[in-house]
Amino acid sequence: MLYGGRSGEHEVSLASAAAVWANLDRAKYEPIAVRIEKDGRWVLPDRAPSAANAAEVIEQSRNEATRARGGREVLLPPRPGEPSMVALDRRPGGDDQGPAAALTGIGVDVVFPVLHGPLGEDGTIQGLLELANLAYVGCGVLASAVGMDKLIMKTVFRAQGLTVPDWIGVDRRDWVSKPDALLARINATLAYPLFVKPANMGSSVGISKVSEPSALAAALDLAADFDRRIVVECGVVDAREIECAVLGNGDPDASVPGEIIPAREFYDYEAKYIDAGSRDEIPARLDAATAAEIRRQAVLAFQAIDGAGLARVDFLLSRATGQVFLNEINTMPGFTTISMYSKLWVNSGVDYPSLVDRLIALAIERHHDKQQLKTSVFD
Image (cartoon, rainbow, N blue to C red; front, side):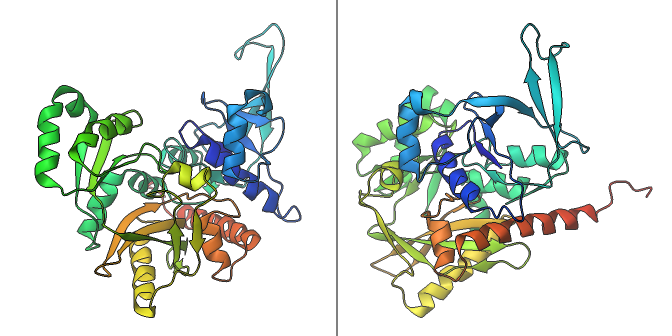
């Protein structure tokens, strides 16, 4: 199980990993926890993840004295072979290359990358696992990359005929070099309220709701702190936030839809992980036709990016018109026992341990299928 990571969603990953770790059937699996530190090191932690929720992990991260310290460093060779991973045992007086460092092999059958955000959910880890020819849970390189980049995601969805709010893509260089022209373009093209987001980030990190032009510059500054590409999109006025979970490979299933009722003006990072006032309703109070349409579009969105394993698809439902807008897809959504993805499946008849089992089985199934492909024209 890989968790942590070099992103603003590091703490959310720790909480998700704790839930997966606690619910792995030890009669079926021999789990190995590998934490990716914020500096990029892979380590065998001194203790496995155990926090109950993201808010607890965030509080721990603010108090450095309570954070778990890493143990031996782990390396994943980017090529097929045995062992799958190696642990580095450093000895006093040596360095990583000398005789004072010894390697211990670690065999791995399947990897569960419980990683959220850039350098984990965006296809980078998936590419490394492909090079190592390891089975892994979740979407592949393409789906992960498209699902992370909101600008590419929206382009793909619109090309597939799915309805998304109007948007403009912004490059941070343009914002720095010609801010007045960019502000004028946005104001001439899009109607307020607007949402300004880093293109490659999740958990609502760096997102602002902008109700008037005077607040736009500050929102762009914030988003630019987290990514070089920024999405500015029209908000759906008086919208309900509806989410639907998808599970499967070639023939995926969609859960019952659920509704998020945020404690704040919109479902930002604080509302998701800090403020206890946010709540959900599962199933969402929808008429049968709207619920069916959301489930249909969730599967279409998943297939549009060539999804595999799991994803959570988020929608905006206009109270005034009843129109459904596809907001985004998350290829490794929050995965605690109280996260929306798992709760949607619990309310659809799949409990958390069974969900983990199913995802591992799907990973092995997909890996087996890929092994049938030829790697040489001379075979």
